[in-house]
Length: 370
Image (cartoon, rainbow, N blue to C red):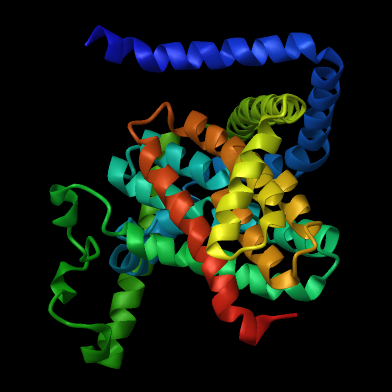
């Protein structure tokens, strides 16, 4: 029993000690990789994510999220088994990319607007790449082929939507017994929208709009902060989160560089080449897969340079974008650590999302191939 308790801690300690030794052996590489990670954070991630973090805090404080939640509840609950307020997270997560979805989901949980299982469902399919990175960085920057963007987008976001539908089955038996009728609409429970008369549908829409406005007003009163105080708190909260994101980016940049110089990345890639050769995939894609295992940008760049045929390269790029890399995994894990949400459902969803996205590239190649 004692051995079982010590084992995970010992493994973590040994890993940390190994990384520390590598840092002592490769001090120059450690410094340069730290500066490279810091540059990526300051020049790319900070301007891309910081405004979204601030505006999301403002929208929560102003009650706009609660307003959207009431309006979207009839669509989100039947499809994904999450409250309508999750629709705001879906929109922001898909527009601004990882890890915005995890951040917003954690905020909703802290305000007791969603349960643990609803939060796990939400994080699982809102952790996606933003369209700017997918089109500008991957399609244009790494592949030099903007016509590849529709295929990557269809594979990445289409498989993400499929993950959302599959995750609706995630949860305890009690959660599966949740009501799927919109609160406040029980009087219409026995009628579908098509069975209602035009007058009844109009009244129902007005009732839902009134309930949404009322929810926004109540949320604003409950928050109680002035606009100046709300803006100040939003900026401070966003800055704290950006510091965490930046630290993780720098750390994984250093770890990736050290593992490369130590030869571990090459060894892992060599083993993966054997596996790919057995299943009939080009072995040259192993490097991109290994880099993508750790970090999205490195994996996407390696996929664009693999030179194994555009179809296979696009499939690996879709896998990298959907898996998101251990760097994003660490960011999401840190964001949900203050909640009761578990990391394992997110990990399994990322794994499935990656393979579904790669499979969709092959399936859609005949229609969307550049």
